[in-house]
Length: 435
Image (cartoon, rainbow, N blue to C red; front, side, top):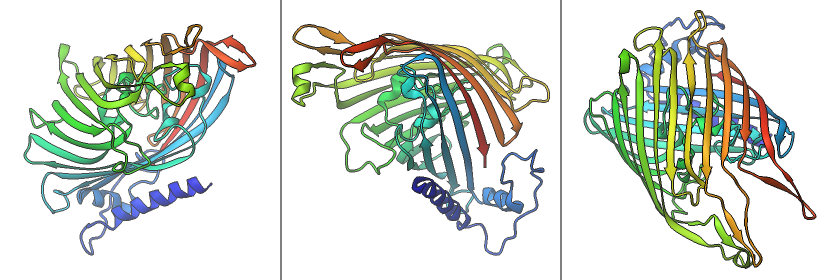
């Protein structure tokens, strides 16, 4: 209960900051037409024009609350049914629109989660419920994962510094991206797992280049990030190593239809605990370590049919491919592919659905004992299908099913007993309210 009060206090505090920002002394809100309760884009509406007025002065925000309920109905390590959720409030301040100076943008994000998930019950490395593990996977959390300032020095080049929430911008895809709150539930369809070497929230200094001055057409980014960031800390006290990252994204028009290509790579010089250990050293609290790890990735999305030119509605394909060192992140090679659709059904413009398959080649961790070398994992695969129903523009309800061949081969039950972990069938339900 204390955590939920803290979430509420954080949300109210950030709203207060936005409301107190300069919006023009004595200026009355302008009347707007956001529609009635069942047609407006957000539950809270436009506040009698105040929200539109704030946007005109450079202050915007997105807020949502997402609740999931999921159960392992067959296989896995247990037949658990769990419910949990996450709240997010992200604000943006545009210094140009505020009348201060052009090209400056400040973003801040509050995020919190609560209750439990089925992620430890599937036998898989990939989380079946991504929404619940952010900003941190265990416990009830309230954090500030992003406080970032970006300044464009001209139309083509911008520099950023601060604390960055890395999942949203790292590996974007039209049909398979997010935090498990709008499209696929499983982490494998929201980001390339070879990138899990990058902390979810960390200090960053970076440069963005827009070759055409239009971020929707093409962008190139280079960044240096702290390798030890955490959503719950400022990050200055525990810096230990750096991650060097580069990424490019370009919009394509194959067959006259919208598509995107993304390619990137990162390298870390941090010293990590190795996935391969010796029992004698572990018993003495002396873990083997390794440094210098890398990852490279590619993804694409391509519409096969669009309801109208540049509508971002229709049906298409997506795919991800990745390769990494395999240590300390045991995912050495990865691919996912599938079909996604948005607004495909007439009269259901906000509905989405997707079907996908992923495969992870696992660099099996080993434990060397006097008598043998033990290993615990195997390659992992998974299938997922979801349909996101827009009950109203601000209320999105999503049934979901996943079948996962998890990386965990067997479960140790104590007293020397163990059992084989079967493929997990997971059913889920998600409700999101856009505020």
